[in-house]
Length: 273
Image (tube, one colour):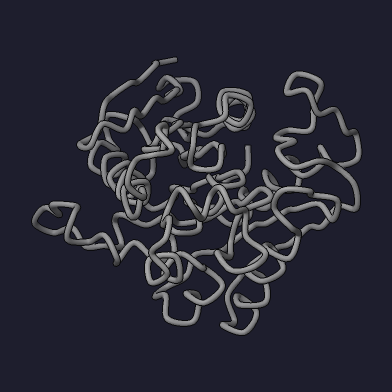
């Protein structure tokens, strides 16, 4: 197995785990990929939603990458705006540009995001066109190369309206109402091109990001006629990651979300081990 690390333009750090090529498993020398985006309110990148999640996708046979994207480490700084989305778009471009060396299928690249990272993952599917001028696309590339082929969202921030997570919305837009509105994703589904399939899960008991966030996105996807799968669990705190003892949130009922997600992604990518 190869550990892969690089710093992208703008300073975001991309780390990956790439399965080795073998003569004994020739059908799996090139694999689909998953890019993991931890949460943290756009103030930090949660460790609990990073390596443990990456390990599960790696064990399921994917090439896996983890992105430490731009966050508002200093609350007094200017709003982040489109910086995190630019990081993700650059990461997706980087993976596809280096697909042969990383032994990944450039047509099967998913993003998996948690909380604010879920907002960012959804942005990568819905708003990539907003950052096209920042990407320095090469000959033959289009904005489609900076978007994912599937999106997995765990208790995501979706709206920047009354039911948002205030810290996430403030870190993105601060007092700029027009910028804040651009990141209210339930209003951006209708005009987004070529939507990939979405997988969402949330808990009714989430005390930081109301479950209505996932419901708003699901309703917008439904109106659009897009492909999605939604799971709502009654109990469980926000930020429960894999719902295991390792991440400090053991919940035997809710941890099934990962198996559901893996089965869903295997069907979407026609990738069965």
